[in-house]
Amino acid sequence: MADDLGDEWWENQPTGADSSPEASDGEGGGDTEVMQQETVPVPVPSEETKQPKECFLIQSKERKENTTKTRKRKKKKITDVLAKSEPKPGLPEDLQKLMKDYYSSRRSVIELEELNLPVCPKWVKLRKNHSEKKSVLMLIVCSSATRALELIRSMTAFRGDSKVIKLFAKHIKVQEQVKLLEKRVVHLGVGTPGRIKELVKQGGFNLNPLKFLVFDWNWRDQKLRRMMDIPEIRKEVFELLEMGVLSLCKSESLKLGLF
Image (spheres, rainbow, N blue to C red):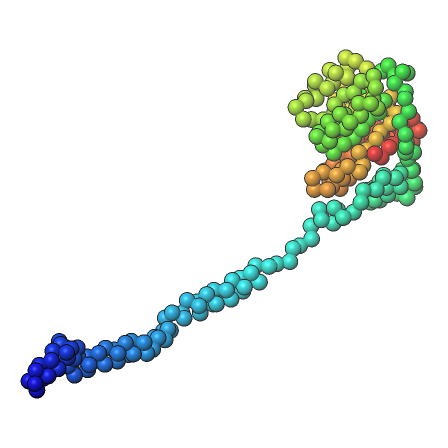
């Protein structure tokens, strides 16, 4: 019986390495390995990984310094000053003041008093009585050919049936303008002081029948300069006045206007 019980007892016991103490030791060893893996400390980032952040901060400082260095104060230009000033209508006193300033070093006090010229504020229709060639009734003086063309286009309703001639140097020769003045009667002329002065010198343009001389006073170019603000134009205007305009104004046969 004892032998039979002993055999049965041995048969019921688990077989293989699982029942041996070594097997239990092996399982315990596996648990310790897992614990070791779980408790492994995370590596601390080295200084090399922090270096890009430091470089980024340094670059931003340099950029700020560069932006502060490039900022400069803008100098005031004459166009900026003129842009803020509102255009004012031309007055006879404006022309009188310019003439006195221009002739103050050349003429005496008595001669300066004789420069008080009558200025015409309005256009009077006289074209019906005008029949002389090589002359006009009204002459408009501009600072450039471009401005003269602009004025001619804008005065279509004003001029009506009257004849208009271009008196500037752009694409038009002096001899061609002389022929046009000799060929037909012209009532209105628009041009620059330089070309008008040249026509008077060559005898192709007569100032005596002229009734009104109008200066394009308030118009400004791209640089916001008026015709009297340009030294070259101002000089030609006064030279034109000396070629017979002043004497006609004194005799009151010619009136000046500021547009």
